[in-house]
Length: 272
Image (cartoon, rainbow, N blue to C red; front, side):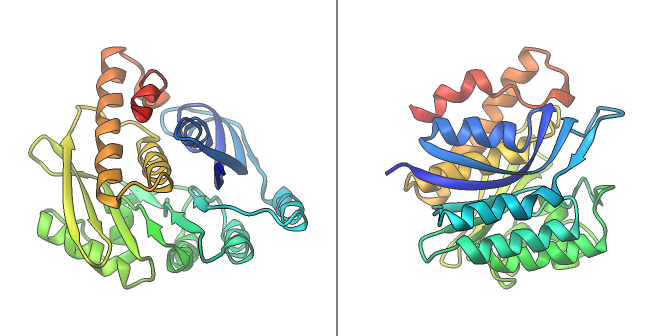
């Protein structure tokens, strides 16, 4: 049977991120992506001004209740940006309601980047995301989010500490931790992984610019590969390499950074 993912993310009309990434990426990897939209935006928020924002929090209980009534089943639950503490409570309930022993729960704890929390994130949301992290099988924080979860004031600057942080994050509850998008300072980007039995730093070439939605693309490829049965570390290598290739193409096309990674022409690479 085709595997199914409940993807709990926002939807932005312009700027590749969240559901506009998860839907095509998971689909090309042979997985049915079933969206649970948390908000609808005219554009993503990085680099665009005066965007429209429609909060769907009030619509979620009825939406989710219909799925419960139909006794829907999912092979994975995948959460990303959540705009309020109320949404965090709804997602926690969703996980409790739909999780089985076979369900993989991936939480991308979206809270900040580049050493600071996002404007829309406050301490209450951070505490709620901590609770989601405890329910996860796998989490994919960036280095800033890892520092927030560990209550570290400064980000780590060396591989030994990145791997130590990944191990410490497992103590919060998730079986597997993948810290993404670490600038190694030597022209490469690092992903620090720990699944309990093993910890490893995986490197890929870094490109000159940062692109919004890169974390969503990484997590979506990672999840799709895991659901195909691919080993964790090979899945991470695949996702990291794919990000690099997409970033190189995006730079070559001179695509504005705010539009995100031009991943569409690269999708066939995922099924080779």
